[in-house]
Length: 307
Ligand SMILES: [Zn+2]
Image 1 (cartoon, protein in one colour):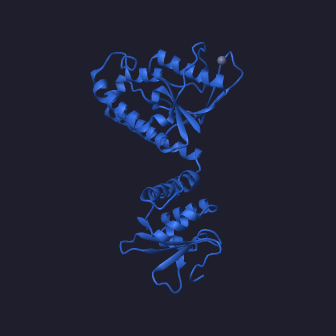
Image 2: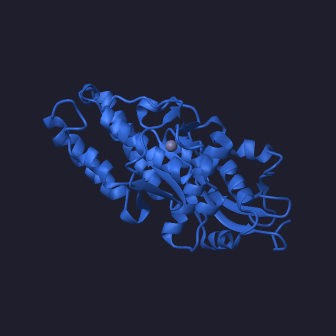
Image 3: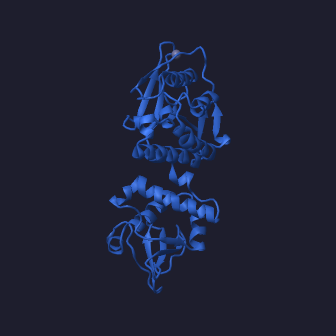
């Protein structure tokens, strides 16, 4: 399981930013999206410990002066987000080794919070050097322009810790196999939603949405279509690719696309089909509102009417 740690800046907002509506909103959105992503991906778990909890929830460390606004607004928000998105099953407590001092990060992290918190964070990194355990690091907004990787070294170990940087929740997409993590396991409503998410993520990650905002159609899956999707094990990427692409193209573009070869199905009025691979096809129809209804998925060796 992949382990992630958090840049303290991910959780900490300065007093100055706290009173700036725009900056405060950006901070909360970044925090919420980041925690949601970690909670959603079953393959990630968090390294955390009590000391970090103390820093976050005991106020005086966060700001130079105790601030009522912080206690009334941000602390409750943090508690809710923390409780909702970091369930205990996904957290492993890691206690920084006391006899390990700091280490040097390249590139260095920006921070506006106290030296004490930063030292604690360096000790945590140093503990990971000691364990020779590379991790992901969720960055706060102050470090959003950092490179893809941070290297941490110290004077007492030979090991160079490689930390993969996560700037925003979207970065996780580049570290997961959507076709494995999001493939539906049954035809329950929840799994259908998971498959829809797989399509959206695939379109964004692999096709960059063809420069569009998102899919051009609303859509639904017929039960027999979804049952066939469940059975697919070897052409998952191709299927996600084909469906996402179809949903990003208008009818004219889909018909002239040499990969999809979108066309009417002979002998089945109102039904169309497009290619997934040379042998695999998806059949669909349009609803009266222009939405797409996925009817059937025929994979290798199966009968596709009208072929
Ligand atoms: Zn060391």
